[in-house]
Image (cartoon, rainbow, N blue to C red):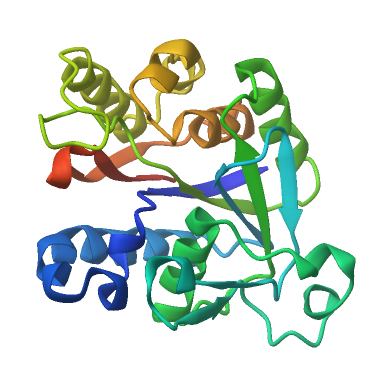
Length: 243
């Protein structure tokens, strides 16, 4: 059963070493993420599953101890998804794949806050993963332990301004407003109903992970709180908690 969830954005710029001189611009988002992780810890989960967008189609699991890095963004910084690398996540074929960037950002957030409250598993979901499979994935996750928490990584649209990565699309602001409302209210039905095609056109990387959350939260009767909602660099970033 799902006992808590934290929704966080996943731009590598959230990591100060990557952002460099622009780091202060996302200080409020970082602080909100820290608060959101505190909600997860307070829920005393038996298991934490980190879900984030990945480039491959379908789903890819990343066991505890899987490594990631920000070298692709010009920074010699390594992270690890929980653990010390001596357990199941420290060796074997499954852990030879690096974390996708979204889960590397999550690993950095967890290291930054000193997460030690429950074992961790990572799950990367590809953008083509249809809503029905996302929902079922969420259901499957929470069926595996009595008290499950989710850290859900993903960005809203990337089309809020002329300088945004996806240029300006006037559909982006209303889409992001509904995303922030639904996530802030823990509105399972609204998250389930997000338009996958529109999300793809607006370059919203969070759609599939959010719908995994919706599947996991069915019947959990959780309340929501919106901690952060802004669009620096023309990209929608939302931090919310469900508990």
